[in-house]
Length: 317
Ligand SMILES: C[S@@+](CC[C@H](N)C(=O)[O-])C[C@H]1O[C@@H](n2cnc3c(N)ncnc32)[C@H](O)[C@@H]1O
Image 1 (cartoon, rainbow, N blue to C red):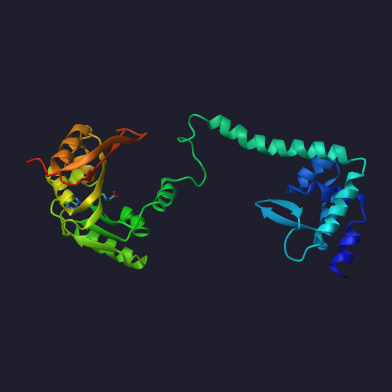
Image 2 (cartoon, rainbow, N blue to C red; image 1 turned 60 degrees about the vertical axis):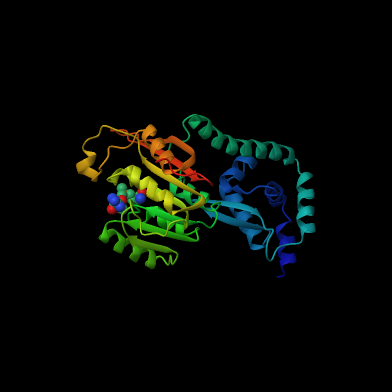
């Protein structure tokens, strides 16, 4: 039987016309159609089966639920046929009630989402959000980063370097642990990141040409440096004019065990120290802020500090 004939046959029933009219703009589940029409589940399923057979309706599974909507793709009936079916449905005595019930069901769907978001308003950033992660935000933000040359000093195995390499022109990851450099380089190769180069070296004297990078990053690395001021000054020298340096580190804390537990040399830094070292190195447009505080004791706080290498500035002696 041709699609048109099948469709005509499927439309020769008042209930099926009602269903077509209900699916005109929104997809609905069997349960929702049941609530709207007050018809039994098996009756609705039978009608939907017939409508699907004749390509008037298509379905989509979401978990355990199946949603139905008018078929607007591929082998589908003529739009005129659907328009005629909806016209027919309008003449049925149930049409007005169906419309009211449809609106009610759709409002309820929307309210369900709103109830949740109203409940979490004011603490939304602290509750679990499926699929929401800083890693995801990181990938999103990277899309707006220009193709920079970056030096990631005290890079570790390259958690951040790898992320940056997906967008930046080149990333040079420097670490003084031979094992970490070997591991990081192997991982970058395995991940096909040809623009990520690991180099063995000290962040106080990084093996990178002066004036050759656009951005220096020191993420949780400065508190390992013997002389942090010297490390900041060394980073300044690597930068091209207008290049930037950003430090992510721990705000000064009193958790002495960090020396033994994490091999930290310094117990974080005061904002004033970071500012002093950045200024002394020659940085201008200095910005320093606390960007995170851990929920669990000892409540480490993360400080973000950075500056720009500006024209005509000579470092303070
Ligand atoms: C806490 S990890 C941070 C890793 C990475 N930057 C991150 O944010 O995930 C510190 C890293 O700095 C390296 N490191 C410590 N002292 C260093 C130094 N003087 N020069 C270069 N790297 C150093 C360590 O080997 C380690 O991989």
